[in-house]
Image 1 (tube, helix red, strand yellow):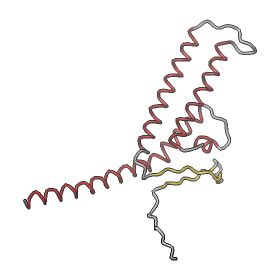
Image 2 (image 1 turned 120 degrees about the vertical axis):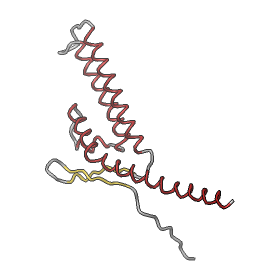
Image 3 (image 1 turned 90 degrees about the vertical axis):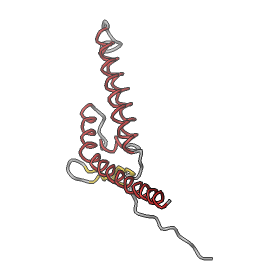
Image 4 (image 1 turned 60 degrees about the horizontal axis):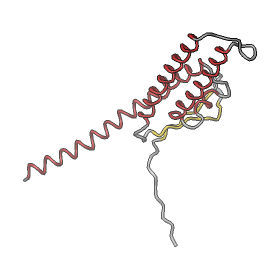
Length: 165
């Protein structure tokens, strides 16, 4: 019995390795399937959900600041404890949102063992903006060109058929 094989074409998967600030390879990487037409939509969703999370946090902190503060159970006041709980929930939601785009454990990979903090989100935003979105922009241009080329040929063929009739 002979074996038949299917030859796969070129992969559209972008694989970005992660290095420490000293340039040492962490062994981790992020993968993006550039052939996935929903990838730009995932990025857009990341931006929208991040904005909503930040607005929600701002509003909740405003509410906490307006109410009367009382002594807490231990060292912190009740309002301070509530703000810390609120920030913890905020960071958990942000990790979910970012991982939706970056892939499983994407945030943890980029943090390389560090705890998530306010500046961490800014660093991740900068990484996405400077090192990932340029690939998305190029890919969107390529997809747009492919669509134009494919469907312009179909339109030309339809015009030819109409001319013949």
